[in-house]
Length: 163
Image 1 (tube, rainbow, N blue to C red):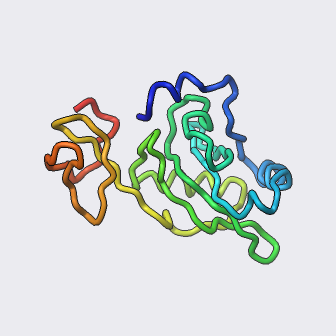
Image 2 (tube, rainbow, N blue to C red; image 1 turned 90 degrees about the vertical axis):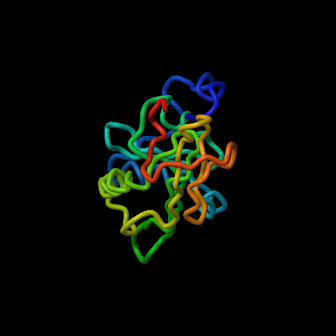
Image 3 (spheres, rainbow, N blue to C red; image 1 turned 180 degrees about the vertical axis):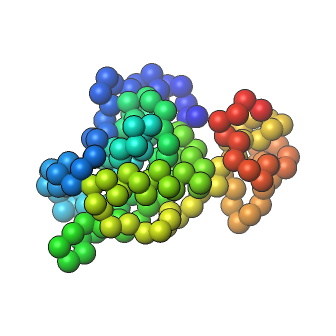
């Protein structure tokens, strides 16, 4: 959904590391510095159902190798006793604009490597495409009005439609 220039910059193999098991996650986290682990990371869940992680300032489309996704956003990890858990997770991706209903895909992807997780996004972002002007919007405080043309926005997610 984001700028075409970002999609053109996607490299073969992508920037995201596939995390399909506990070993994958342990290897990935061992390569991170303490300073990196303080900030959230970019994540996607591609259609294979596995989590992919990249540095925070990475573009989601690059993390996904330009492929379609089930969800995308930002995620942060914390150490809890003897295991890693998700401290924060959102669907904040202006490149893919995933609906909040994409949480089950994220939950399944986090369960594969055995990461502790919340029961839903800790921060939900509501995306809508304006049917009048076609612009993408972030709905704030339940105000379903286009910030570009002042038209009403639909109550249901419609970002992947051409209307």
